[in-house]
Length: 211
Length: 211
DNA sequence: TGTACATCAGTGAACGCGCGTTCACTGATGTAC
DNA sequence: TGTACATCAGTGAACGCGCGTTCACTGATGTAC
Figure 1: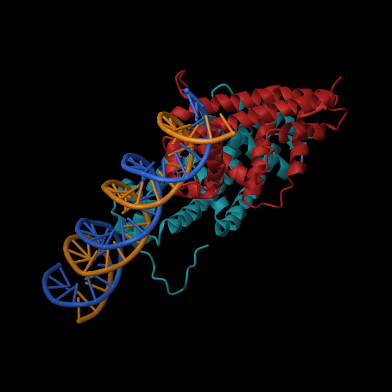
Figure 2: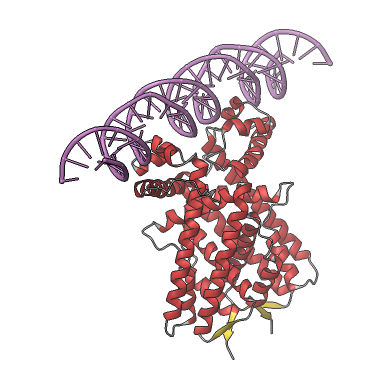
């Protein structure tokens, strides 16, 4: 994605900080205005810079979005690695508990509001789905995430003395699907559905005692 | 939602047609620009009207979106009713086939591009999630949809001589989750995952032969 | 360590386009006799 | 059925704001001696 050339000047610490603050602010603005509705002006104001600083760091809004997707991928990989490490050192736990750990690993740690993070991520997804040149890299990212989750949940069920009754990659898709769906229900304010209960039903249905 | 007052003049056929064309055009524009990125100008051009016509029919863009959500709900209900009717007259079918009918009932029939329809619906969802005054009506709509699907799939599994191993409402959430998730994968161009196979795994896992 | 200079990073004013919104208008549709 | 008039529906020009983008600038940071 990044067209890093050998002759590019290295970015200073100050510059990196500015880029980071702009991207963090943009995430919040994207969450409540949508990507197409977020103005450069509003992003800069939220970050505490003027618009000139923005154009000094990013070619245009599209370049910012690209950088944010890359950054989001990096955080996700980091979170996955942490989760794998946690899992390896985890003692005996209940099946549900282990799967909860595995899945929660894919929610960003950070100090972000969960609602804001969720909305921002959906915006990035929709944006990537619409822009032809972003679609393929984004797809590759998602695919990679799923193989990492596959490794995690395989470990998790083994620790719990269980095994899947469906192919592992199907299990991963279904777990991710349930996760996303339940998050969506929260997003629109549904309180009648008990997310944990639904999730437990799924886990119970697709696992059994290992022989 | 609609503040219909008794003294409102009835809308003429011509007016209804104009509103309809504007909303149809807006759906396409929303799909590839996003709701905040769609300009009134572009919507009008796509529909073959001038901007004046737009403001003669809708207070502003927000009013258009509201009308579109209402319209979308109406179509969904109509589709659900058709599906219920189809189900009642259906003979013996395989379990997967029946569930496929049940779920496909919730995809709009019409002549719409499926990709466009999907993107537009996601935009409407995100928009409703963001606007406080739209959230509750939208949630009510989604909840209603799920109870209609519940009725459908209950019928479907019974026809197939099966029963759910999880509570019916959990089954519905999981089926809907899988459906949405697999559509999302299509949206970002994933071809490695076989949607039908994943779906079959889920159906197999949450059903068993009825005694 | 201190000074002089060069480069870097962000400022803020300016420009101009596009878009939302309004409104006086005209052609189309409907109605009364 | 035809004519005269009223209302309705969409036109297109106009206004003005906000926003993307540029650029000459200044203060901050780094470097050479």
